Length: 427
Ligand code: SAM
Ligand code: SF4
Image (cartoon, rainbow, N blue to C red):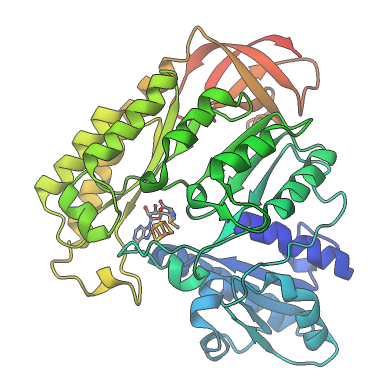
């Protein structure tokens, strides 16, 4: 989501007259896009702001801004903490950047813009911005209404608002015309998408509309909430060949008691049933998830329920976190906080179990012919790299430049983070 917001900001800045530079030492304007979902993300953002301030001290005429969730949460207080900052831009104010820049550049003002009541963020485009890319995001909604007890998102990104279907379709067409082959639809809870502008369009309907776009090879989406995963959405995976067989479906905990305290709105059994339906479509259907250890009151037994769920489902991959207190959430005031040392120990047990499972799931791809969307040279160089339909990285040797093409690769080796194979044919 932050990457998408940064792209939106860059396009507006380019329309305003700025160019992009890879070197922040050369920049006339530096915006730091921040996340505050866990304390660690916040600390990282603060330390980056400190480093950028040292540039501003050397070159006082540059514009230095902070945007995103920390900007939304801290507002005016950021000026007290960092007097060198010129702009604090909240999560729903990105569309107002040109007017705000006029105030800073022409009016010599410092600006705090943190209005969360803005319903729809206008997403200004810059023609050709995505010309050299293969994949892109489209945000289909803003905010969240779920109020999971640990989560800061509803407070810093506001209530849920779905973007108009027409706007999303126009953005998708513009991306495809610039050469984009794969689009990932974004939202805190994409599967509760509902637009009522002209006629009611829900998330499966939106997927069906997008799947008809000529030139678009792949659609993905993230993140979906288990409580809103309908049979209709599951059937889209069977019906729409451009919809990739991968879902990121956070489960957070394997204990019903903890799930209730988290206010997640589903049970362990319901979650298991959903994943079974998805793996019934095809056994290599990739399921990735988010999980947290050390939620207030999490006992050893609760933690073992989480481990049991992980072993049972065999996730392709997991993002795992230690619970982190966030200011203003209801979990912040819950009793029986788990000690940091215990959280670290649970996290490392969980991660080592998941590593084995990830490798096991990757090994199951060996001997298969898989479709890969080529993204360019591999990180170490020498090979081409791309992703298969299940979102796994696939590396292979080729003498031909194939960036942007869909190719068939025969998988020969599997590692924790990637697969390796030989090129069979390019379409
Ligand atoms: N909307 C998505 C969902 O419901 O799954 C998740 C969005 S959240 C920004 C991404 C992940 O961060 C969550 O799935 C959760 O695992 C983790 N997270 C959120 N708040 C957290 C907290 N207070 N401490 C630790 N992890 C947290
Ligand atoms: Fe946070 Fe996701 Fe829960 Fe919304 S659904 S409150 S974004 S964890």
